Image 1 (cartoon, rainbow, N blue to C red):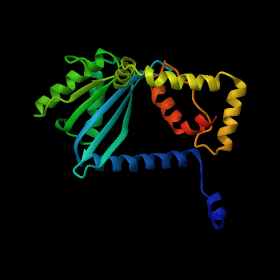
Image 2 (image 1 turned 135 degrees about the horizontal axis):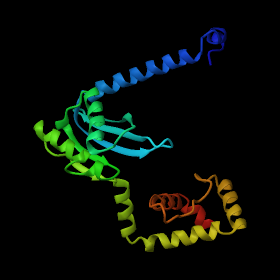
Image 3 (image 1 turned 60 degrees about the vertical axis):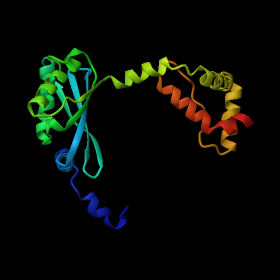
Image 4 (image 1 turned 90 degrees about the vertical axis):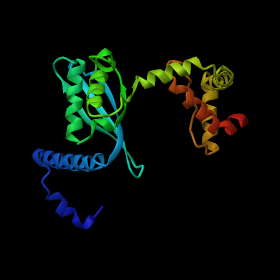
Length: 229
């Protein structure tokens, strides 16, 4: 790229301080753009995840998703807060409050909260949800919809549904192809010869509900090749 400017590029300082300053400049620019978009939100929702890192420090991730008057949706990870002390509902709320103030968001425009974790997150009295509800009521807004561990709820729904009539034939076919090394190698070679969209079939695992959609979608895409094989 730009071979005529090789000497110019090689003369640019790439010291640690230079790179650090550039990264900080990019960070300020991105944050400025996000603040501008956030100021135009008609309503927004937040999603929070709290987890412990390898140094036993609680890390709080805050995601914001908002929509403006033109129905343009913005979704970003806006902050990561390292919490070295206690992690009560009030402690978490204070960190969230900092981000809401930093991006000039109005509490009364908050319409949905998605949380993960224990009572410090979802508690309706002393938990984060309870603290947010108080602030919103004081600002004249309506209580937001609260969702807790939405991925886990979807997993439970997926386990409750009886999909055996659909899954059993698919799983049986996949196991027939993949459980024998020779057949599996022949199947992959066959897919390559057919210029198939995918090179292989994934195994089904009942531990992860997401495996349902993955294996069914791949099986459907390769249904013609599987039938011929």
